Amino acid sequence: MNRTLAIVLSGLCLLACGSPSKAPEAPAPADPETGLPGTPPENLLAKPERGKLYYDLDQYSMRYMEARDKGETAAWTSLHDTVLRPMVDKNLGELLTALDKASDPTFRRIAIRGVGFGSDAPRIAPALMPLLADRDTAVVSDALVSLYLLGWRETPLTPIVALLNHPDVDVRNNDALVLLRVLREHNRAGLPPSEEVRAASGRLVFLVSDPKEDEFVRAHAAAALGAIGDPAATDVLTNLLGDRSSVVRTRAAEGLGLLGGSEAIPALLQSLGSNRAPGESHVICAAMESIARKNRWPCDTEALGTDPTNWRAWYMAVTR
Image 1: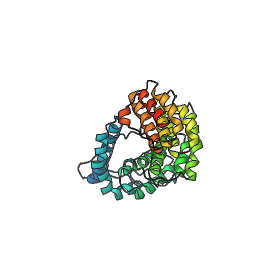
Image 2 (image 1 turned 90 degrees about the vertical axis):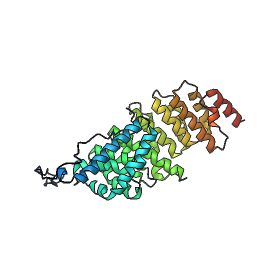
Image 3 (image 1 turned 45 degrees about the vertical axis):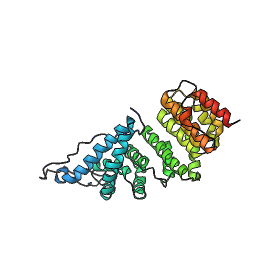
Image 4 (image 1 turned 60 degrees about the vertical axis):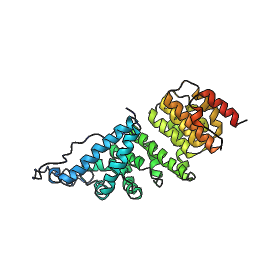
């Protein structure tokens, strides 16, 4: 399964409807930190409308993730814009309250994963940031998924950079994705890299260069490295164009496109001529188009297609 997001939203058996009659409540479990009795678990049957909100959010979130995994852009975009975002925006107060540790654990997990579909990023992101320090790695990973979905330009990056060292592979994967998404937003806004962003470069180079690291972590770290905009990353990313992992090669090409240095084009041309898969070839061409745009070179990608011969002729023409 494609690990664009490492966490697949699993179905949780919530009763959306049912009789409002009281059911016996289980004893409240002790809080693991204080040893004191915790909050009694909610009787979901007594609050069918509240249960339905979380059931619907869970189910539609799963459909969204499945559509993204399959590359069904129209489907996941429609789910996001017409179902999930309005649902979260309408119930944001309830969902933010559910993020609290004392909330029903089932509702809490769904809320953590779901609030990222909302539109009020200045309100949502600060509520998610404390969860990055949670001792439960699943909570941390879910919070990162929501931060990725939000893609808020003002997301504080110091705790994101720190999580690149996390021992859990899913956390590292989702964390690199969040960093990449936020850095892209910085680039769109023309913001220069901050000190906290520059500090991430060394860790990203370490991740992409570690052959034992998960290929998706290496791939997303490679694209994030390019998004930082440090020309010193060119050699690292160029070397990754020959990596044995297709996803690493593809993300390295994307990183070179984000970096924008014309010195990367010969390596991209060589990679394009290496019988790459169609999807990989399109990313390489998109990277060269991005470099051309930053260097103000004319570039008709529709006419050039993915033919290496066409691109070589174009490169000779624009650099003559």
